[in-house]
Image 1: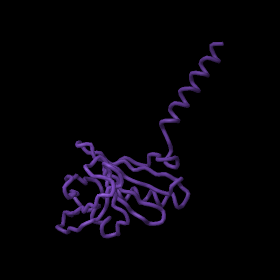
Image 2: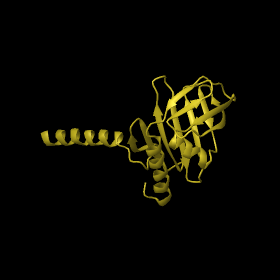
Image 3: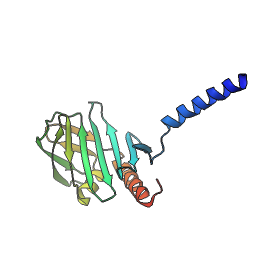
Image 4: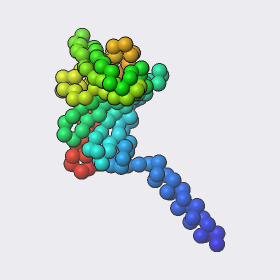
Length: 160
């Protein structure tokens, strides 16, 4: 009887650990942690993304899809659904540009279809200046974006 009870407890513990240790191929499974950035992959949607939380409650997320689409989302900001937004990106070498987006939902801003130059600017930027919403530190964004791209390649090859 003691053996059966011990095996039941062991099985329950293994199940608990397996549930919280999701592999990267499951829905939103952890792929990597780089500083404040968390990289996750989802084979069901063909998407990998990296996100970083900020002390003001905002989460910045950059999505890569297998079809090559790149998007940026700011969640926890003061925007309304449908509201037009412009984000200025300033890089450490002095380059800057504007990304146009919209209020995806109340509190969430979405910037879709980012081009390679914009992604490169985000990777090289020290900060992201969001018109009327805030300034966000992008430390280690380059490493996180490279890992996110690696995640998408792994999804495409079936390795994740």
